[in-house]
Image (cartoon, rainbow, N blue to C red; front, side, top):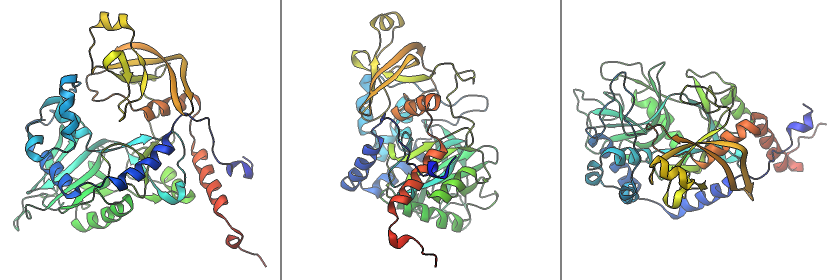
Length: 422
């Protein structure tokens, strides 16, 4: 590749308004500050008090089967983000699972390269494994997966995480960590910190949260080898500024876990529940085993498959808020299949593909395949569908990310930045 090629900024035909939504998200979070302490206390108490609602899965069994919520139940979902402890403890079945799934900050898939990537973003290699919340409180530690099922119930070295001789800490002492459990080395890799020792970090920027994560986790002893009062080891992941050297280190650097793509976090982003364009996931075959989605047999289908939710008037939409409309289900299929609102349905994308106008989806060639696996809690997000479409037709490559960083560096240079050689 010629030297001037790598410095060319990456451009593609607009298929997404992701950059605009990133800018709006930053504005919105400044306008909508929450009661962060109450938010954290509610989540911690709910994760502990709902143990009986989602029993730990037994060996050899899959996690709780996820059924979709009928339309009549969706009204309760609207308030579930701000439930107090008493309300949350009354949730059952699908409501429990949907509530927990929406407490995590879920990254969108990277469709285009963010502006100011080198200046405003962090990057790190995402560990492969089970995404979960870990809560320590009142002398015990509980981890819950996205669907609400308990992964582990154990003692830990986190504050208030184990019953030890000198007490388990005050009732106000609790922690909430956003983790990925890596099965191979039985380690919880902490990718974000929501609350530490009773202090909520919901309304703190990623820059501050990552600083606290690295300093407090090590101090607590949670990174030590397992022991009687500390069943699983915790570990922070190496986080880099997303300049050229940082991106290269995250992409090619050796880590003690299997990689499953790269995660990008905007430094100014607060911890937002649900999908957010201020956190992004990107993959290629060099940093993930799972770039292209596979079918139930673990094989890559010849046509891209998507999962959409059936709504009123036969509309087929994504899991986004607001949802993106992909089309309408054929009336004959609806009558013959006995489907109803809320069902998750699987489609293949036919030869007509996806068509875009001004960065928005105009048409999708959908071929109905049947109901989705009951283990699914949600439809695909719009960014995931687009990322999978791009991977098959025009993937966003690591060289494209590096080219954007180099181009931005060139634009910011001034005559005074250039070192004179005498």
